[in-house]
Image 1 (cartoon, rainbow, N blue to C red):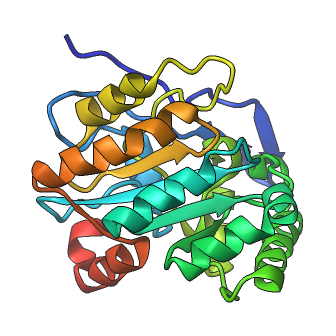
Image 2 (cartoon, one colour):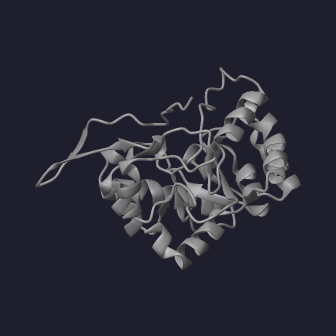
Length: 260
């Protein structure tokens, strides 16, 4: 039986009052399927494509993309990095200011190992409640913090805190040179006191996987850390190839007619 899952899909209250209309914020979400197909995202797909945002690779038969959100550390990121290095799999880590401040050595290792650091804001606010200037300040401060402790001086990819967005924040990020990165595969993995064992993470990923998937995982999850080696091994056997977001964007630029 198909079932719908909701990942940050709460419609928010009124956010901005413009001179002509009320503007609302949205929470990213998709319709779950276990048919190895890109999930439906409804009207969100039309909203984000006008601002060069991404949630899945729509032009592939076997490529997938690993991303992790890092707001704080629970002691599992090093194991995640070990597994990625073992399998030579690239990933993007979206970090906050707290994470950069508390875990500079892990940031350095991410970059040294060839991974990408993405912008998850400095203080993890809801961008849809902010002005463009305040949003820019959040993004700039995080970029400066990452540049101060790693060799990566420019951040290109943005994952909005809580997955919230609207036409304003998409437009502003685009103007600031950022690519919004949403996702087409996720599950409830962030509750550190409600972990269910590695097979829970493994089963969720294998059930939802599809060509072009952008996976959202959290490194605070012990389940994810324990399952990752098995997940990568299984998906490679199934013919999937792990690529970086940079590789995705190069292809996306070449094949604009597919994505826009």
